[in-house]
Image 1 (cartoon, rainbow, N blue to C red):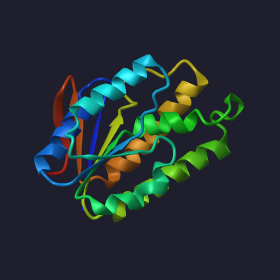
Image 2: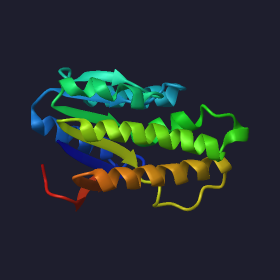
Image 3: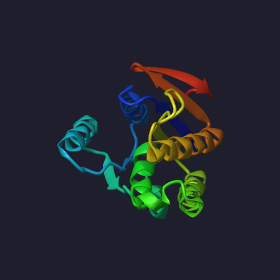
Image 4: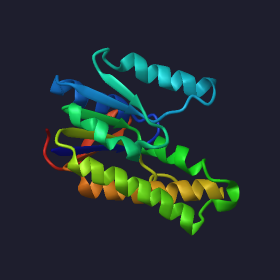
Length: 182
């Protein structure tokens, strides 16, 4: 079992790098997609990801309940989870504005992430996890933005602590910051 965590800024090339890592394995791959086509721009982003993926890869779309489907991973040698930050965004937006940053809502989301991470730890193949890095910019101006940053920072730290390898992708260049190359 191996967990490879790939993080970086938005449009940094992190997904393309993670896809390249999966392709190098030349084994069965499950691509777990978390995006939701909420508008034309998001449809285009999703289409770009689809175009880059090999036709041989299986795809599972889990934009909200990814934690409930970790058992699906067992039939694959590599799982590419793209991405934690989008999954987290989806989860946060299920709460009404009055519950943003609410302690119970925060604990509910942390519970989902912990359940997913527990399943990831039990997976016997190579797990490649992609997430945006929340700590490179200033503090968000909105309540929802700050909640997102706080939750993503927490989630990324939890994942990085569990990962065997961690890469930061900056302007399309991957930099290994933890572990040995798989």
